[in-house]
Length: 363
Ligand SMILES: [Zn+2]
Image (tube, rainbow, N blue to C red; front, side, top):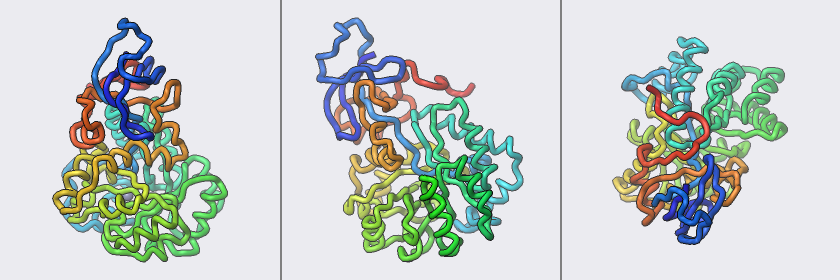
């Protein structure tokens, strides 16, 4: 198949064609210069790398009802918030099933990876690995250690399954414990991540010690806090729809102005389903509602490019012949592709020639 129109990837936006075979890019060039000599199906559209969901708690997909009212703490704070009671009362099989279902939602949106904070120690991390078997979405698992004294054997076991650790917040884990956990991540070449400044402002002196690879939320961070995050070299993940449920919003315009690397995530599965296109549109619209507009280009990069750079896989964000990127093909007008991607894309516009993994929706 030939897709003629626009390419939106790590190099930005350009007009061109992409030839795709078996779900891989085999040729890229100027429109009208492809080697198919008219013998291949040709469509007009946009080609991008696979988007990445930058922050999830997929096991929370156990609950599909309207979330109970209450404060953020009532809903998600360990050890007895609504979500932790939900996790404790569910069997391992039910949790695997919920995560598999969430992963399939993302697979249908062409999402290439999801960076998941997976509670419940090594068992929790294993459940997610198992749930992702045979699905084309790669789970990047940030596991969580049980509270109390750090058990080295349990930590090594967790880091052998997980891609790193993701803690609830610096306020809930003492500095010594954070340092020892982060040190173990560094030694194992794994990621260290936490939530910060979500409901209340926290001091960067706390959450930047030790310096995390990824900081989730920062809804209450001041411009000065963000500048410190930026100079520490950390990446931020923001979840505008989840924040909005509690009357908050991430300071996206300030983040864009600083050039902070930002990922976009859908957060807890019982608050928002992992529908990344809707998250992108909401981020764009909500920034205007707040009179702090962000560009479609910034949001598009936070879906398609920054996450792959964060994961150390920048080539996955480049549409090149025989490169490692899995192309996402959208049958949308190629004019202004960043705007199309952020405000008009949805599952129904995805074209899937020889897509890896499952093809159709669940019956
Ligand atoms: Zn979270």
